[in-house]
Image (cartoon, rainbow, N blue to C red):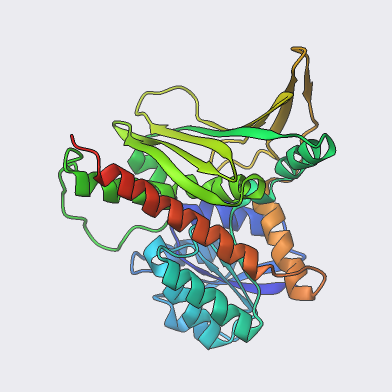
Length: 345
């Protein structure tokens, strides 16, 4: 049986990530309905997929062929659309990152999914990447004492990145000047948004190794768009750095784990690229190195396979982990914002 998927959001994120992935999993899923926010893009994507299209969410959620909803809308809409999907009686939900932007919303949607018995998967593709599982197995097998975790991200400029994460609002966007980042309140809001919208990709993996957030040591914005953020979690020092440069080098997305004996580097493919799993390299204390084999399937495919397993009962929807991941990201974002607001320009 192939589950019918209704996709809320018709931006390039849906087009470049989930539609190609679902096309590779046509024995498990078929796209039956795509809805946009008034842009008209849903009709074009739906025509390619042989699906229905609409504007807004009402028609999609009333469509009896929709078993599963994929939420690919802006983050501020996620919690409300999850609750609306549950009210419509869907069988499962895949939600793009982040799950919610406040602790209250995160708790509410997880409680609602638990009460309804509906599996909810947050599309943290790095966490589902087979390479990350391989890296964790290496660390566990050696009983490694994790000392540091770093995530280094270099991306195209802000507009090019955020334009493919979710569907922009319909209609013309009024011109806006650059935010005044010398204003501590504005800088605080920006860094919170960047943590919840960008750093969130790697935070579930960080929480895998260091689950107890202890405090933020520093948080700074990096021009033109980026951040550097240091915090402590379960006694581990964590450093997150991201920058978006108009004419920078090739994209980089690397997670490194330093232990008492070696360093494990996980090099993920660029965002929105279907190129198989990440690459795992272990650099040993004797200066030798080991590179693990790559998997043909990427984290996008494996997250949808995980949802299929939850739907047919062979997998478990670990809602407590979903909630804990969301709360970790929100509390880190709040901590970074508080530290940044206390910095004078």
